[in-house]
Image 1 (tube, helix red, strand yellow):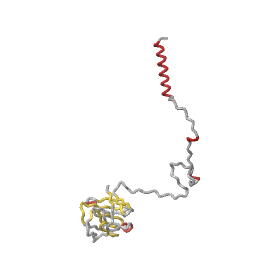
Image 2 (cartoon, helix red, strand yellow):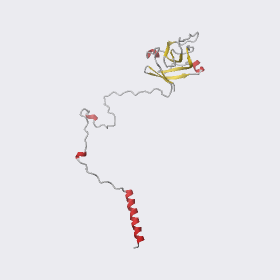
Image 3 (cartoon, helix red, strand yellow):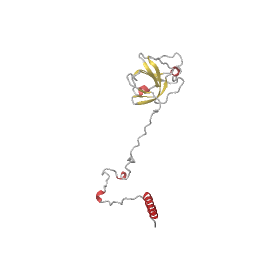
Image 4 (tube, helix red, strand yellow):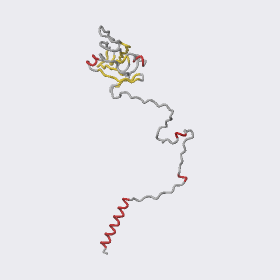
Length: 197
């Protein structure tokens, strides 16, 4: 056999061996495990027997444990006010027409909802209840978010309506269903966190 033929056979054998190595990579032989390498973790003595077999990554819930009510998230994608631990979802009235109409001809607001009137500058703005269908608490708020005046349980009217006006300036006026201010002990001097997005 010529050297060229011998070299060809060697090349074929090497290629075949390399291909086998790629398909079946060499494995390390298994090492024997001695008793000193084994660590046994015992469950704590105070764990109830029926809870021992539960997977570690699962919460342990006793059958007689009361289930907590899920937390209902407020509508965080819209303007809101946070006051005395209560979150109010807000409708915004910041144009002259929206401020003129306000909540006229509307049904009572849903629970924990309000309408926030936003003005261009601080002033002692007056409000009335013409053509309203339900009573309101009207809350005047300055530019720092501090309540400066409250009118509680203001009734609707259809003729000769009185005006309600504070003797201090405000940048915002918040209207909510009557009784809301008392329900959270809202007073002049209370801070309202207005998140207007």
